[in-house]
Amino acid sequence: MINPIELALSSNLYKANIKSTDWKEALRETASILEKNNCIDNNYVEKIIEDSVKLNFYYCLGENIAMPHTSPEFGAIKTSIAIVTSKDGIYFGNHEFNPIKVIFMISVIKDDDHIDFIMKIAEILQDREFIDNISNCENDDELKNILLNKIKNQSNM
Image 1 (cartoon, helix red, strand yellow):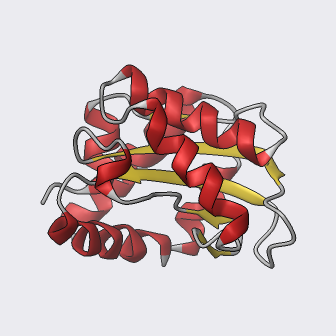
Image 2 (image 1 turned 180 degrees about the horizontal axis):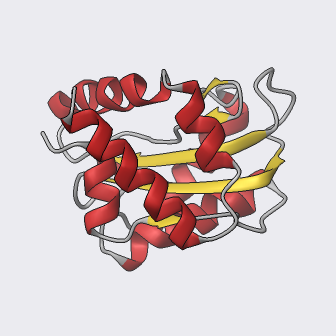
């Protein structure tokens, strides 16, 4: 399976410093990147929003990090990831990891690939310096450079 960061870069599925202040708006803004690239349909993000409160923002994974996703049958068209950042952060309910500054929205079309893809992203999320760097990006070019450096460093390991 392809490296999630390479996947986001190869399809321009990233955006730095989004201006959304509401969690629903932030999820829709992130999903719009995937929708424009035919990775998901609109039902996908609406299912994530529907489940968010019901399942206590299950996708908030660590300090400042969210990885929203849902089952493929709710509108995943192809396996993909969108990476967005918010310098100011977004509050997702009363979650302990607020404010969220980095959103990795994933779509996976095969249930079997779901775990592998999430595990690859989880490895990336262990790099706290990387998360801090991308969460403070001012613009898309800066985010792109940090993502490219991450790929370069991964290939040197």
